[in-house]
Image (cartoon, rainbow, N blue to C red):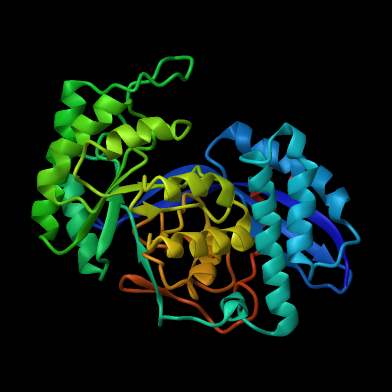
Length: 391
């Protein structure tokens, strides 16, 4: 078996975020990047890279077309060899970020192919699951009023969810027109964030985990002040309090707050994770399987974290392949906490896939179909693909 082509799919489609509290669909157009790897035996694998910006999505799609030439003719069973071949091809321009995004999409697709060839789910290829169902967490509607956030959080709990994450200051972060983050937050925004979390805690009770996401937007003193403000509401973790470029800023926060710290969605590969673990800078780590190097790399990162007894919780801000790849990778990981799902309900993904994701309560259950367990709907993909980014 040989790889014949790598095809990037750039999809622009309505993303219905379900407002559980009011049972309404909130329509937000967004882009998805899916990766198709074809073989000479007709077996296709699917991956995903979905980024968070216009520029990043188009950059990785352009790169994928060139990387395709690099690995065409390679045996898709040689997943580790192909991972390193791509990684080292970018070494003089920096082997992180865009490089590991590209690797991720291809790596996930290769594991999908491997499972299909063997007739086994990807989760069975790593020693089998250690749990029945993969725990998940979700999000209430960021940016809504104090009352609406509390109502939505309560409605989420009523569906069986036990953990949720929010950025309580959204969308009031201070940012210059040139994109530079000031690291500050107005007093009004600080108070609004505290009011939102207080209302959420009152609505969901003491037993539900409330996770806080700072999106790496604050300077050290602002992050410290915000964490201290939210401490009375028993927050489960305080995520990316400062920009990820400086572990020294992270240490300042770590040394001055009494809440668990989580980092990782912008940590790429085991090499960037290592100093976080060695310097004991985080209580949880959350690499993204579609950005950090795929299933191959996140499994290695999970094992590293296990040696420090640090739980791992894959990040998700994209589509169905991200959720499924993270779940398959975590099925055999003893130190797994939860897989993130960026929505309160995942039925919005059904338009992409030939089978719905099996969500029951606060867990996702993997099917016994081979590979990742789904196929993407080509008719829907073609109808929503941008010109030049499809089969």
